[in-house]
Image 1 (cartoon, one colour):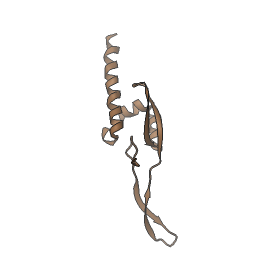
Image 2 (cartoon, rainbow, N blue to C red):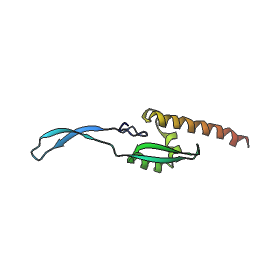
Image 3 (cartoon, rainbow, N blue to C red):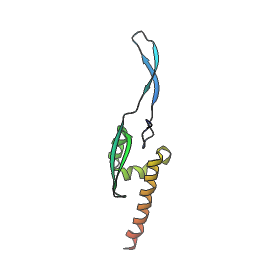
Image 4 (cartoon, rainbow, N blue to C red):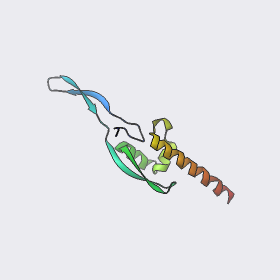
Length: 102
């Protein structure tokens, strides 16, 4: 399992651990990842993703998973999230003509 957020593509960064005597040794800063179950209103099902806590706040701020994915840049999304985005867009396109017809 990779240490990369599926929504924001945040991954590990490399830096230095600095001792009191200013000796620098390499270390990794890992993203704060959580396994979270989001509810997709458009798809009508739960979606389990491994995302950073920052992404959880962003999804909540944007009004849910569907709204976040519609606004998200496709280049930053994982293959699973991109598949979800396409499915949500497809459902939205199917629902739009029905709303116009009535």
